[in-house]
Image (cartoon, rainbow, N blue to C red; front, side):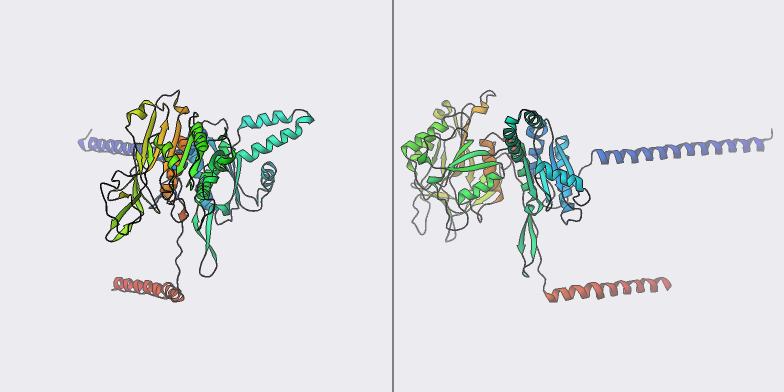
Length: 528
């Protein structure tokens, strides 16, 4: 065979091999591309993650709500929590409610069932919901059903008994329905204000706060009771709501009912009490009342919340607290800036406590009057009695406890005044908290030396979180200790008529003219 012919055959074989190799590579690339696309679609559907790019994380559920949805009370339920949103698709709030409730369902997993019902198109389902829950559709609403299947079966079993028990069974069913089913209208999820033209606009959203409260209530059913001494506190305030009313609203969101009682009318604190509270007491306790408080404090799992008014001298209550390692002082925490006396106290939440595990190291400001607390954290006698005082909030540096309250120009006197550390809040543990078999029997107390912060104008979000965490800690709901939801505020910009005219001219004349001029310049340059 001639050399030229063999060379041509060799080159042809090389081209064939090269083409075959390229075909194999292209096939592998196509198959790999398809596999990658399928994998990405699977991962995005099965394990997708939402990213909140707002500066304040306005569309991310709070730490408090996340802990609730991941807690044992939700995840270990025999039946899921059912959230039914009866909202029109044409509603301006549908998109926000959809995204928010989807986040609840995502974090709750299989323990939270979410259903959206279109009342206009799904008329039969809307009527069925009205029949089951006794809530006919009149406006957009959200129903949270926390009833367990065991309860439903028990109710059905009871209803199959004779006619003699029919009335009692009906009452039980209604009690379970009202206790474990909460309904919220969409209009309750936001706050409205009037603008300069007397038109209502949404100024803030409180949807997460309301829905989370509804979930807590649907899980626990009837609210827990904390009694407070109404005959020792001022039930009316000169300005705004009284401190107990602010605390009542705050605890109601945690499914805790603040029930007023008169110590002068009872012989002992009721047995069904989850806790007892003294809210800004204006009168000292009598000997009989101190004995009543001591008997309750000696019970296992007792809890006490005390907020003090520094202007009121409560000698007997001070002696009672001193016996357990926390002694309220007769002073005022103040500071001086230039020639001005600073009564508002800047403070820091202490680290290491269960109550302040999420607030530890964060700062706040307590408005109004504050006194200092002496906390004997390392007292050997108290330790031998299994009593542990814990400091929770400490005043910042540069402040002192002034014992003379009538001075116009106070100056720190180390011989009379109290110096740092100055504590504003403290906790007391009584019992053996480190042992698993006795930890649930420990008694707990929280004392605060400021009551002025419990007002509409003074209360700050971190202080509300502290109070809620303290109450949840006292009644044994450790899973609900954390930073709660924040209101999402909307700021409306007011524009004058001249501003409207300028914006209209800018959009309708100047911007189009600029674009036309730019296009003419580019066309002329290319033509040249």
